[in-house]
Length: 355
Image 1 (cartoon, rainbow, N blue to C red):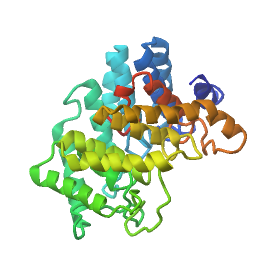
Image 2: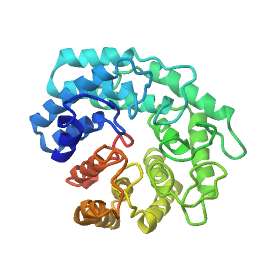
Image 3: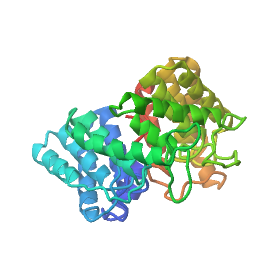
Image 4: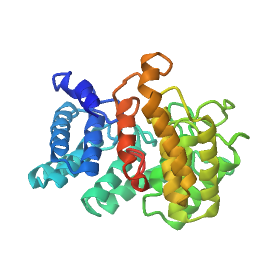
């Protein structure tokens, strides 16, 4: 973690070039907040606050509105950090800033840049600062837009479908899995619940024979086993469905997707978006869901690989360090977050995806 802070914050002269959680310095702040939660070290919280303050200035004119890639992430994490620090003035400032965010009419629906990503920020705020910090009415308006948009693109057997840049993606980052994951944290009407369930069943019925999932509708390429595209992100969504609905079919779907990750998920990158760290969270989630020690052992196997060989294989050129090698989603920032989560595996949650 010290290396991540040094490379992303200190060596930059504490200037913000990228304010996002995904590849920018807000991801370092999120990592520091995780460290504070794990150790109760107030210095981590203080540095986290300083970084968020710089991100606040850098993102003031940003048109992006999501938690992972936009202004909502800065304001939401800022508010939560201020609450933990007992700073009422700063808490109110960030909440005011968050409530001033307006969603463009042409906003997509997905997690990284769209309505689902804004909704996730609302849920994060409510979880950490109080149930109705962001009103149910405000969130309901966004849910309505997501449901209506999905129904407009519905196809036979799949009542909710979405496009991003002309493709009907299935995965967590840009597709149906990520949108369903966020919707399952909302207060849904009965017909909406049935649409979510039926959409998930459609995905199960149309997965590859291998058990992996297409990156997009109609794709025949059974290649990607990432959080962003493929079985890992979908597995986390099925874990969520099993927790929310209690249906055994979703438990089994999560387990089946986990088998794909176990057999094919030891990738040549370390990050959480498309690397080993992200895939390890699948086993931690399955452990939380089932209590089966097998998944804890599998998580530890992937963790040990990262700990024993990750940095060495990167330095030898046998693994890719990521395009932003110290970031939360693409680099060792995510690996550091995973190691902190390993302190208490039963409480481990994929960053900015599992609440």
